[in-house]
Image 1 (cartoon, rainbow, N blue to C red):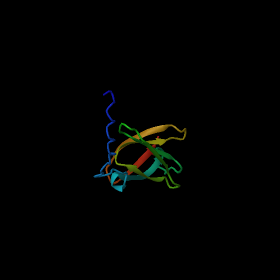
Image 2: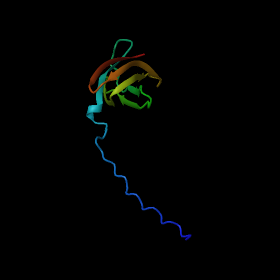
Image 3: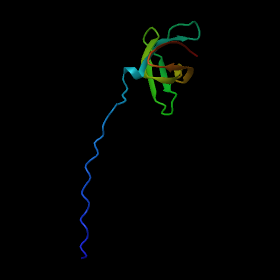
Image 4: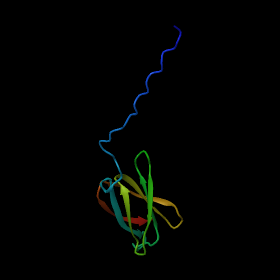
Length: 112
């Protein structure tokens, strides 16, 4: 007999079983806040951009702007961040590296 065999029965669909789901929740983040001051006179600088670059391989970036009293606050994912302040010419100047681990970090930045 030259009749081909019947095709195999289709397999049932694979249904994933979730044992845990990783999400960006408050447990995976922290807050960095602080003050930006001028290098001459330590006067608070209003409307100054503060840039945060994630120091991991994905290199995410966040930014915030100081208020009228030079203060800022930003919620960031946990990890290491490089902190920059943009000067009056718009050039980002490196300030420091911070490690944010599910907590709150206070910094004082001096615009150069």
